[in-house]
Amino acid sequence: MFDLAEWTTARRALVDEALGPCVAHGWPSSFVEAVRYPVFGGGKRVRPLLALAAAEAVGAAPSCALAAACAVEMVHTYSLVHDDLPCMDDDAERRGRPTSHIVHGEAVALLAGDALLTEAFGVLARADLSAETRVELVRLLSAAAGADGMVGGQVGDVTWGSAGTDLQALQAVHVRKTGALIRSAVEMGAVSAGASSEARAALVAYGQAVGLAFQLADDVLDADEDDGDEGPPSYVRLLGVEETGRRARALADEACAAVAGLAAPEALVALARFTVERDV
Amino acid sequence: MFDLAEWTTARRALVDEALGPCVAHGWPSSFVEAVRYPVFGGGKRVRPLLALAAAEAVGAAPSCALAAACAVEMVHTYSLVHDDLPCMDDDAERRGRPTSHIVHGEAVALLAGDALLTEAFGVLARADLSAETRVELVRLLSAAAGADGMVGGQVGDVTWGSAGTDLQALQAVHVRKTGALIRSAVEMGAVSAGASSEARAALVAYGQAVGLAFQLADDVLDADEDDGDEGPPSYVRLLGVEETGRRARALADEACAAVAGLAAPEALVALARFTVERDV
Picture (cartoon, rainbow over the protein chains, first blue to last red):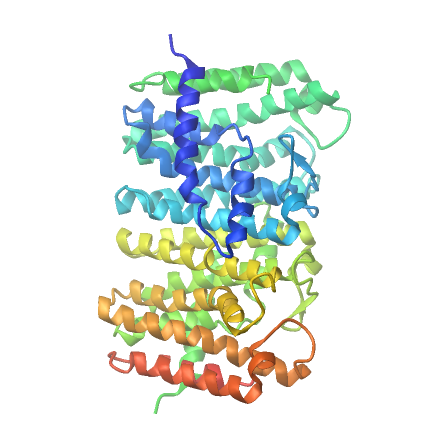
């Protein structure tokens, strides 16, 4: 019986240990704390865990995917810092703490986000992997986080409604805003592990399904909180809580089926199940 | 006699042609224009020209350094877009046009900057160069633009005074804020061209001196405009116009001496002279 809690605790410790040196430098020295603050703020490390689990699924040691895991988490963190800024969502609190711009001011928060994004690519460039592998990781992260990916999804979120307000329009935003980086976390884990092209394709299919399931499950959780009457459009508003939950579980099934043939898919399977069954 | 105007016109055309496809994609389609707007806004292309000139100085074709040139210009452009935001310098106009956030709104301008920074690394990852060369370019750009480099310099600018207000403090900001990216443009040109380690060291020395000369010359130009009585600290305020100009010319001499032994330093020499003699 695979113990997800035990696996997760051990892998989170690996990730946190590896993230430390990634955000230990900067100038002036006071800026280092502004860069570290959002990185060590109680994040669940979903994307790093997926990267490590993907590497382990093809029989590799999780350590080979730590650079990819850290880079993806740094990009995820920068996106939260910028998303919380007054000109975006204007959020004063995240995970029970004041957001970066509340603590360090808007200008320094903006720059801390810029630094995290920039340094993420440096982490990949310095990884203990072949040059071919490192360059492929840079390409994948740039594509997932860039104008066609996560940033595009955030633009769609900000300009919501200009491209329709139906399920297709909502999905077009979420495939990019949250889906692209989650999918790339899995694929970057596969690439770090030197996965075969068949295994890589299976892992991409998994990442795609889990990325969307994650957003559906998030919408269900948010609906439980505030009944879904206010705020931005969501799957729950368009489909109802039950149908959204049903679709999330179906996507998790699809994800698990995609990786069933891999050497050690246990962690991936447990993570996909947890994604749609979690209550936080 | 080397004709800098002719050389510059031809090289700018190469750079603009190469930049087009770098910023031709994005989602939603309306976002593409927001990404392109600051890139094609009358920039002088100083950094791309330096990258191409560095490659040519060691006998390579300028085309080998076009990916580096485009990536550096995209990073420079993102830094201007973020620098102009209300929470930073709050500038409504740049180069005679309204700034990005005036035209596209703060949120989309922030995201356009994020996209340019992210895509710059994708341009390097896809370059027609060896994997080793591409990964070295990513490493150099991340270091120059990151928390110890350009972003750090901007933090120093924003929090000016906390580390002193003397010449040493001013130089510590400018070495990072403008110097690091200019230096990396030259070094990335050298790496793209496969320069020997001796030639690369000479080009780094050139880039370092020109980067600082550029800032000194800028301060002299700004002083001519407004007499230097208001605004942020500058070399002119601390040294006077004449001494600042003298130091800029001395740095240009130093830069030219560093590359005198290379195969074809003419463009670099002319660019260094132009940097300190320009009136725009």
